[in-house]
Image (cartoon, rainbow, N blue to C red):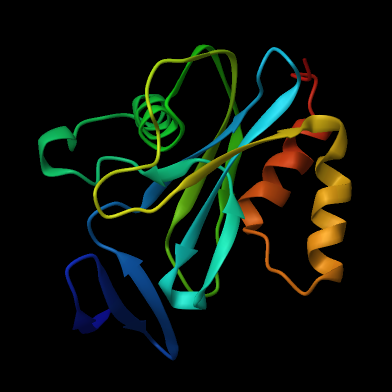
Length: 174
């Protein structure tokens, strides 16, 4: 395995003929499918530089990506990200599964959590480097919302689609 390039968070690697990107400061992420007592899913909208557009996403973030919390586990990261991005805290957390984000290109893996028993306890909006808008979308309308966005030519973060599939296929449904 050969390192081709290293940045602050990523490095380009080569193993045989295969080239890929590795997150050398946090390979795992946590994504939260948070549902309010009114059966609304919390979504965040934010600009993403690599795709040069605003995306609708689940609250999510890297596990242990901050030097002073490098020993955090996936649930702690999910709790931190939900509060940081949306201002909500959850009483119940259920692991829904782990998904490889883009296994032909990046090493990142995402753990998905169902969060419920929500209470609004802060402003949300992310940290100083983020410009996040929080949305509450009725769970009953989420599939229609995704279809409408596709028809408009807008992109949806794949974690939202993956979480919806995990949720719909799971006995964890509320």
